[in-house]
Structure formats: C-alpha cells, structure tokens
Image (cartoon, rainbow, N blue to C red):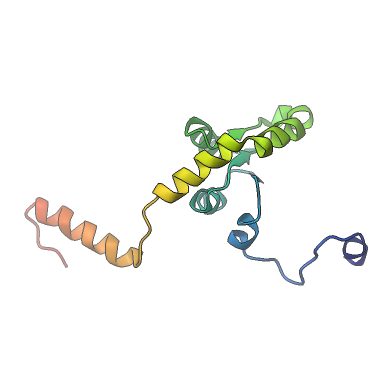
Length: 131
C-alpha cells in the first residue's frame, strides 16, 4: 500500500463507492454483474465486460447491442483486452451514447412509491382491488 501511494497512486483506507469512482472513469471494465452494469449505465459510462457466466455474457451483449459497451471473451482476454479498452476510451461517440442513455433513464424520486402506483394501475386494469 505504501509503495503504491509513494508511486503517486491514490490508495483509500476503505473502498470508495462504485458510483463515486465511475463518475471519474472513461470506461468501466468489469465481469458483467448487474449491479455494476446498472451503476455504470445510470452514470453514463461505457462498459467493457469480461464475463465468466452466461448472465454476465448476456449483460455484456445487451450493452454492446445498445451501442454503449462491448464484450471480451475469456479466451481472448490476453490479446484483446488492452487494445479494445484503449479504443473504447478514445471513442467519443461511445461516450456520448452512454451519456444519452443515462440521461434518458427515468429517475425515481421514490422508487417504492412508483412501484406501488404501477401495481395499483395494473390491478385496476384487471378489475382487482389494490392495497
């Protein structure tokens, strides 16, 4: 830890919040977990996914299909990761698309209240009594 700090790297005493770090990032490189993907998506950071499991691969493929991310297969990590990451960080169009998607995402003041309202509307449409 001391050597990293001496070399000019920031070494926090405790792990910082992911959202705090992502706000300063040009690219999020991660395994494709939904929590990390959602956080980067909401902030507007392009993502490069290195999946280990099916759901992680599907998350990466969805980000790629939306034009805001990419996937590096496990077998290609050694040769493809660095050039791909550098290219994605330099791609202003990718960064712009990621920000556009983040800005278009609905923001809930009270997500629980919105979920209850949606459930009530759904139940009312079926003729059921809502709580």
